[in-house]
Amino acid sequence: MSWSARFPEPIALPAGGKLATLQDAGAYITKLPKQMHDSAPWQNAMHVLIQAADHGGPIEFARLGMMQALWPKGTPVYHSVDKDPKWRNRPKLVRDR
Image 1 (tube, rainbow, N blue to C red):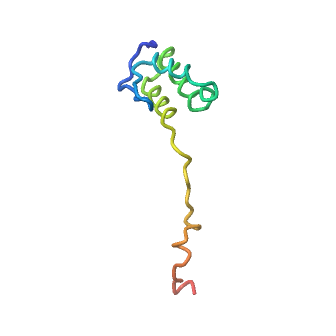
Image 2 (tube, rainbow, N blue to C red):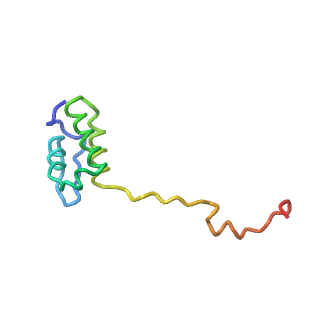
Image 3 (cartoon, one colour):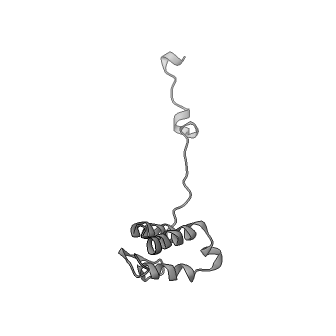
């Protein structure tokens, strides 16, 4: 595969526009500010782009890497059942009295 390989479906950019090929995605990453370019999601995106273009890796992984870097998810919030107030005030069972 080469850098001119096309994504199965173009990637929509947050500011408008689309990335259609691996070369478009690579150029987009190289134009990012250094601090953003050096972050883990963008480094991962560049890694999977290189794998797809130079080593015949799956192009869908490159697309997914770009999507995860462009549209990051927030930090997951875990709720413990022990800390949930609706479970604290439950009536005691007869066997627990």
